[in-house]
Image (cartoon, rainbow, N blue to C red; front, side, top):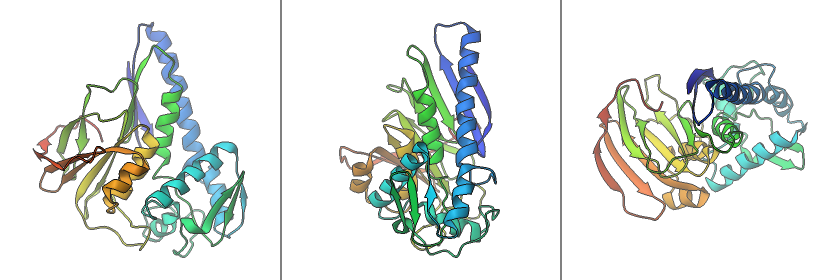
Length: 293
């Protein structure tokens, strides 16, 4: 069974396979979509009524905020990725994104300048040393994919794809199409781990914008980076760091298993965590609208 619907500003696709009646698979898909809806309502920057927006109203005034267990754990993970990537992944980039018009200003505006180093999670409390806005967009989709996979019962094969953040229960010997910076270009790759996430930046196009949290400047490289990892949250966070030049050894230490890059000319390179040299894989083939987005 395959189901797809708009969610989290993109599309969520569930593929479920099992020796079960269709009615049971349909009920399972509804349960999994309900989990995605819950996480969207909780962690969306775009929703005024989300838990994240409530947290941002406190953070914008540099006030501490009480957190539930799930939010505290997610913020701790985000701060861990910030440390591992030397700030290339940073929730506080939200202030820059609001200033550039890429995120809504419904919570208000905060002068850019705060960074992950101004945040501390102690127990179930967030301490903010400098007025900030937090965006979980660089980690929340991957986290949501992982939460859905965790709810798939034994005996069911599942693939969850949320806007290009993908994870499979049965991934060995599977190939996927990974999006390139061109509108119709992609490259086929084997799955090097159970999860993969792709970030695309193409200046002047509508494919994505990359802001370096360390400088607030937008990138000018036209390329896509796909990170393979054992969980979608790790892959999601590390794609941004890879695009901003994080050393591959640091990527491996942070949890990446492989990295694939497609440039504007369609050239493809792939590196694996075993420290093999870059593999020139030729040019990205032209693809239809199917494949990973």
